[in-house]
Structures are given as C-alpha cells and as structure tokens.
Amino acid sequence: MMDSPRTAVSNPPIQPMDSNLGERDLIRRSATASLPKPERQLTPVAKLIDVSKCIGCKACQSACIEWNDTHPAVGENVGVYTNPHDLSENMFTLMRFTEWVNPETDNLEWLIRKDGCMHCSDPGCLKACPAPGAIVQYSNGIVDFVHENCIGCGYCVKGCPFNIPRISKTDRRAYKCTLCSDRVAVGQGPACAKACPTQAIVFGTKEDMKKHADERIADLKSRGYANAGLYDPPGVGGTHVMYVLHHNDKPHIYADLPDQPKISAVVQSWKGVTKYAGLAVMGLAAAGSILHGILGKPNRVTDEDEEGAEKLTSNPSATDPGADGHRPEERV
Amino acid sequence: MKAERVQPGDAIHPGNPITVNRYGPAARANHWITAVSLILLALSGLALFHPSLFFLTGLFGGGQNTRAWHPYIGVVLFVSFFIFFAQLWRANLPTRTDVQWLSHAKDIIGGHDEKLPEVGKYNAGQKFIFWAMAGLILLLIVTGVIIWDQYFGAATAVQTKRYAVLIHSICAVLIICVFILHVYAGIWTRGTIRAMTRGTVTGGWAYRHHRKWLRDLAGRGRQTPAE
Ligand code: HEM
Ligand code: SF4
Ligand code: SF4
Ligand code: SF4
Image 1 (cartoon, rainbow over the protein chains, first blue to last red):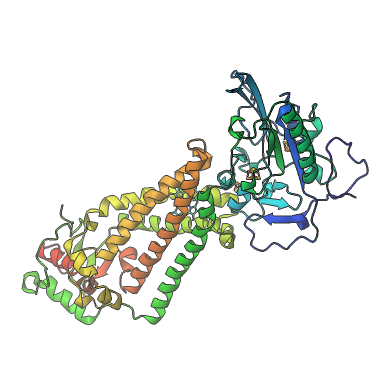
Image 2: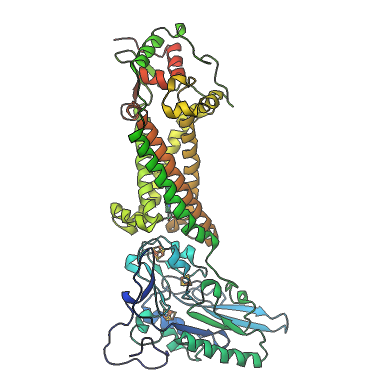
C-alpha cells in the first residue's frame, strides 16, 4: 500500500483498512521533550490552492462542514461574499473575497483566497502549546490538534503567524483544518479538494504539487501575470498548504496573507529564553533560601532584647533614643 | 509626606513577655487570603509555564480546570492585596533611615540587628517586598486580563496578547522570587510568623527589629494597663 494518497479525485478504497497515521508517525508533539524518532518517514503531502482557478463557489466550505460534521450558525449578509465572517470552531476554511484595483491595468480584480491552516513545517501553534500532545505533527507534514489533550488556553492562537486556530465557546478546545488527516490516514484526499469543481484545490505529494504549480505558473506568466508564483513561505520552513498566486510579489492583497510569515519574535522569546532563565532564577531563589536556612544561623530574639523592651516600655523617655531615634522620619 | 510609624490598632500589652499588637483579625484573615491565592496562582501558572511542571495541573483537576480557575484566583488576589495595600502603604513610604539601614548590608544578612539603625514598623527590606508585590500584581492583573480569552479574547489584537503573555510570564517569575524571599525572611527572623497567626509579636522582637516603632508606641502611651 502507498503510505499517503497521491490525489484527492480518486474514489476511496472499498475494503476496510487500518489508519495509516498514528503515534509512531509523529515528528513533533507539543510540550514533549523527548519524542522517539519515527521508524519510517511518510511521503510529505500538500494541498495546492490555485487562486487563479477559484470561482468562489464555496463547495470546499460545504464539503469541509459535511466531512467534519461541524455546525456553523446560519449567517447574516453584510454585503460581502465572505461568509461566515471569520474562521470559527465550526468553519475550518473560509473563502475570503477582496476587490482589488490593479494599478497597472486599472482593472478590478476579484481575488478569492481559501483561508485556513497552512500546515507549517515549523508550526508556531505547536511551539506555543503548553499541553503535552494537544498539537502533533506527522512525518507527512500534517499538523493536527488532539482535542482530548487541549486545555483551551489559546496559546496556539498567539503562536500562529496566520491567525488560524479558534477556541470553541462550548467545549473550550482549539479547532482548525486537519488537512483531513482522518481521510489521508485511509488513503483518501481532503474533502475540500475532492469537492472542488474546477480543481483549483488539488492534493498529492508535496513534490508533485510543486511540479503542478510550476506548470500553472508558466501558464499564468504566458498570459501576462509576470509575477505569478508559488506561495510556500520559507519563514515557517515551507507549508503543506500552498497557493499559486497571480501576484506573488504582494501576497498581502489577498485578504492580508502575510508577505513573510514567521513565528513572532515575541513568541520565540516567551517560549525560549524566558522559560530557561525563569526556571533558573526561581530555582536559585528556592535553593539559596534552603541553603541559607540550613547553613546560616537564624535571627533570634535574645533575652537582652526582652529586657530592653521591658525597660523601654516602662519608661520610654529614659532610654537611649539610639542613632536618630527621635528625629521624625522624612521621606527621601 | 511623612511615613506613618504607628498604625491604628498597634498597642503594647505588658506581661511576661510583653506582647505588641501588629495586625488585627481582619488584616490577618485578608493576608491569609492573599497568601493562599498567590500560592495557588503560582502552582496553576507554573503548570502552564513549562512542560516539566505540567503535572501540577493534577492539583486542580486537570488542564482545563487549571486554565479556567487561574484567572479567577487572580482576581481574588488582586482584590485582597489592594485592600491590604490601602491599609499599609503609608507605613511603607521610604525614609532616610531606610538608606542607612540598607548600607549595613552585611549586618542585615548576618543578623546583627544591634548594629543597625532603629527602624519603624517596617524596614527597607519589607518595604521593598511591599512595593515589588504591588507593582507586579498590577502588571499581572493587566496582562492576565488581556490573555483571559474566555471573556476578553475579542478585546485585543493577537500581537498585543503576545506581548501580554510574555510580560505575564516574566512578572510571574519575579513575583515568585519575591514571594520566596518574603516567606524566607519571615521564617529566618524567628518570632515573625506569630504576627500572621496570632497578630502579636513579643516586646523583644519589636525591640530587636523595630525599636522605633516600639518606642513610638510606648511614647504615645499606647499601652494597656498591666493586669
Ligand atoms: C492577578 C491576576 C492574574 C490574572 C487575571 C491571570 C491570568 C492568567 C491567564 C488568563 C493566563 C493564561 C492561562 C489561563 O487562561 O489560565 C495566565 C498564565 C500564567 N499566569 Fe497568571 N494571572 C494572574 C496572576 C498571576 C500570578 C500572581 C502569577 C504568579 C504567581 C501568575 C502566573 C502565571 C503563569 C506562570 C502563567 C503561565 C505563563 C506561560 O505559560 O508562560 N499569574 N495567567
Ligand atoms: S488551546 Fe489547546 S491546542 Fe491551543 S495551545 Fe492551548 S492546549 Fe494547545
Ligand atoms: S497555520 Fe497556524 S495553525 Fe496552521 S500549522 Fe501553521 S501555525 Fe499551526
Ligand atoms: S483539508 Fe479537510 S479540514 Fe481542511 S479545509 Fe479541506 S475539508 Fe476542511
């Protein structure tokens, strides 16, 4: 059997089969220091979204809701096609519509980008997560949330450079696109890719997807999109969801897709130096106190002190006022 | 403004040994609430701070509960500490004597109180702990509310939350160190803990560590008649 499906369009195998993605395929596990190296390496997979072929039908959104059995509330029309208005625990992918006037041609271009988890090779969500095993990464590149381990802290939201995870208001656990890991595990491609009528969404090995993207980019260039290119941002080590963009020189025009995404330096220092320095400082403070307690002599009240108190209280004015005893304390 | 040297309720009781009232029952109860909530916050916060401490979530009934309870306990800490603050801040204003006292660092650490200048109700070390706690608790509540996603998730941008969680964890480390110092100083200076349990200290303790306070109390006639 092949270790990962090569396409989303083929029909599923009909014979029962075991899941091909498990604990033994993990290459990263949140808040876990020592993870055994997996014995095998799965072929890296990727979903490729060709923005230039998308017609904005939202079949992918429907397929995603259907497969994941989520229940987004009935929306409200506010005059834009983007619906619902944002990703949510019930909507793992969202078509974001942008009306953009190309300054070179003065044409109105209707940009439609399928937003959702990018399945980063260096996932900021996983780096930030404090709960062991709540976020995992498989050797085929899929980054998945394991809800029973999630504590709902929202750190993944802060770690993600693409603003993807959402915390459920009902069960307080984090949700996002799974890259249909439960389908990929049994030889099927993602539901959204399977549903896409124009094959703007395709799925396969990361290598195949890059080749396919090259063909699409050559085609777009021949049709005047000189800046067409592949969005596979190196700042996060590349992604397992990639875009073909007709204006790859300015990703931000596609509903604020980051030009150069990377894990925020604030998050890096929070999860890096703060932890090591913090543990060291607290450990030293605790150890220092204990050592001083064992080795040092406690500061005890003596009999002379009690006698002094006796004298002082029986006749306060008669005792020596000390260094500057009667001078009122002034503020410095 | 002058630092307050004697506080309402402080009084000397003759006896053997002499005892001196330092904290009334309400102040002590409140201080215990502050102390317990700070310990619970440190434990629940540290559970999320580093994977090696995640096991601490077991004390609170799992990760979800730890995450959910921590900020509520934070609000309790904030309220109880600032009630305490309102009562004590005047007595904790810095004075000239504090500078002289601090210049005897060696005698402080060596426990040679007889070589130190006389101080009022609080010495410079206690004042430092008081103001450090006040500042850190303020920073912790502000940053803690920003990252309290359950209620305030929509109120700020992700970048703001990133800074908030970074500052929160640094302040947490600092306040835990200040707390260790505070508790240790209380234990090392024998006879201090009873101020928090019984509310009184012995005359000898007051004479040794806060003689100016004792002198002021005696001078102002804040004494109950001998029985
Ligand atoms: C004063 C009010 C406080 C509030 C409102 C507050 C709130 C929060 C919140 C919302 C979190 C994120 C996790 C969660 O949702 O439970 C958190 C984390 C944390 N808190 Fe607090 N907190 C407060 C005080 C404290 C104090 C006094 C300490 C230390 C003794 C502390 C230590 C921590 C630590 C260590 C973390 C984990 C930070 C990390 O993961 O790096 N907090 N706090
Ligand atoms: S919300 Fe869940 S998945 Fe996200 S960081 Fe917290 S524990 Fe991890
Ligand atoms: S896009 Fe965000 S949620 Fe998805 S893998 Fe990257 S960091 Fe994690
Ligand atoms: S890969 Fe699956 S979970 Fe992700 S957007 Fe497509 S259908 Fe939804």
